[in-house]
Image (cartoon, rainbow, N blue to C red; front, side, top):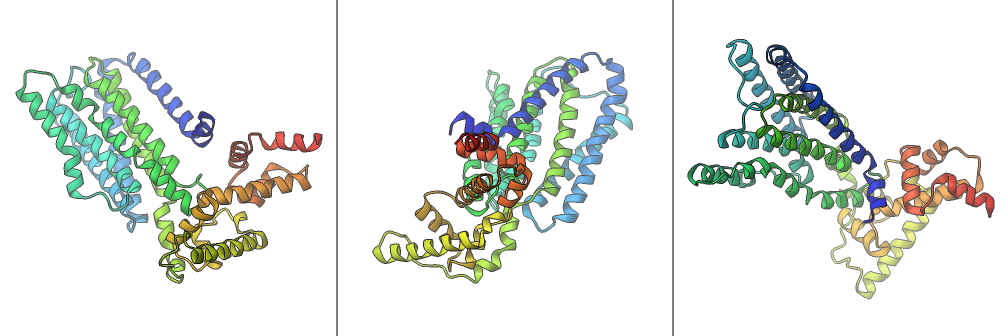
Length: 395
């Protein structure tokens, strides 16, 4: 994948990371100007109260509207845990009027880093379940956290400092998760005709927030200033609030697939449709001709919600063999196939109607917005729609 293609696919995510990093740096600079008493007796308590409130409200909202989705249940549980933790800390600060912990004031001890790893692990439960539904089991959970306790024990018994390993272990967990993103994106592209409302980009943003927060925690673990603690608190609040909003209102591809499962149940699963034997090749060819006639005649790709299982209207195959058929006959995913049809339709419209607005073209071709249309058109053709029109005018 070239840098241009990568930037085109993840432009929003790249700018999200840049702006968040800039905000973290600015926050550290600003927090250094806050008087210690004001932070201890006011700002810190407010931030902890906000974390508790947002977590509790978010857990209720997610559980109320998405109680049948396992990944959302996981996130609701994570929010409940954070609500309890924030409430206990707030009670410690207000009711018992105790001093704050040493976090951010002196370097952390091994057991404190173990607790930090557990907190980080909680935040990784949701993406782990989203990327591989059903894979989040008690056994895997124990295996993921086992190295943390082993390192902590070695740090205690051996005359060497292993705290840095505990500090960076959450980053290793993120690297493990990102190894599944490519397969997850491939699955989405094999089943859906658009990616802008799918969780792929959202998961990148979530992991970006986690990594920046984790990096801030590493700095915090070995720092002697409360500025980093202030940044860590509002960063956690932002992550919980923003993530809850995204999780509640974004579409879940696995759930959308279940909603169309009845189409798949009404189709025939071809037992040995490999496309390699002469008989199978002839049948694949007849399916390809039928599909192309249907695509030209009905233009289903103009519907932004067009999905792989919609092909069941013309091909008697289930989802697995539909995907295999597309890959075998066209050498690409369903998403790329539909994108090619949409791009060709856009070219036809611009050729026949040079004055047509991008908004109208994107709507008629099945793109979700003019911005998405321009980005995909530029990626596929090497020029913007405006440049394409100019080329047509000059030819």
